[in-house]
Length: 419
Image 1 (cartoon, helix red, strand yellow):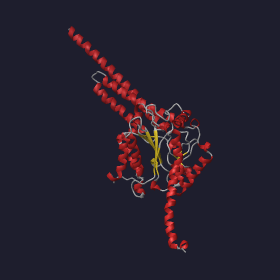
Image 2: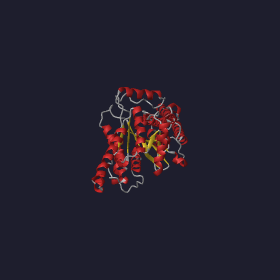
Image 3: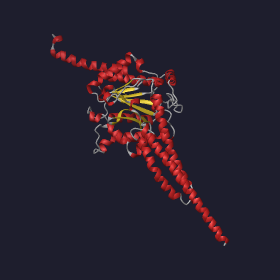
Image 4: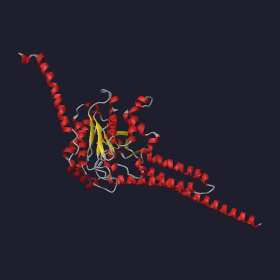
């Protein structure tokens, strides 16, 4: 009979499978599609939630008063290969919910851009997509564009949505205005799983350099591919002042699978990342996702009860002191240049050389991989302070000596005129 013919069963099966796949994809798309807040009441509620967690540091609210309603943050991510993965979808949902709470749009790529399934090439989709979103924001007028983009890898779970991304942003004065990318490192160096990058022309240039690097400079070794390429780009001498490393446990904590490397998920941790875990990753992510579903109160700790406020305030306070010391050094050199004396040119060179080494050491710590190290930063600040004080003392003595010499010369001239 027709119903039992193998040939017709195969035909029916071939017709049925695409319908199943289509239904699966459409169902997942409908369920996990990012639905940014649309109603003013929702936005007002998000602002109230942030105000309830406000602190004295850089935490200015969901919307910047000068931004005409634009979100300060937009979230960006992707899934390599475009394959449906339930664990990744559940992880993505935690980020989308975070965005809905704080008013952050979430951009998520599900298709390959380059590589056609070759992971060695496909990983650069990450930079390409981030660049796409970056340029998209740049095409908007000021006041309508996001200020910062947050990249998060698909193998992350956002645990505590009481911690807004804005608390990590740099202050808006002095040298901090030049900081355009906030990064963290592990035992292998910079990790590109989670980072924040400012919406600006510098970011477009750096992403372009990183994307082009493998083709234009094939001699450069990039074992970690797009991660090394991005690190190379922002580590060029002209870019060092625009990057700053922050403690990894703030926004890129690894699962305790890496406990032997000192990884601990602290109380109220914002996010947990699962890099390089192979077959163990799905179970580990599922563990945290189940815990978030069943006992959210254990993970979603109020911001004031976490260590974030004190740690972040101490971090920027230490860097402010370093910035003030560099400013003091520059002010002193300006005074030397303005001094109307015969020793100005020689003094400028002498004191500039004396301060330059201490300034370089302090800049090295600030722009290095561990500016949060209080001992290293404090020592560098103290050395520059000491160099400034010694230079001021020496310069005062030189000015006094010149004044005495000028006085003696005047007296000799007067005596000669009398005779």
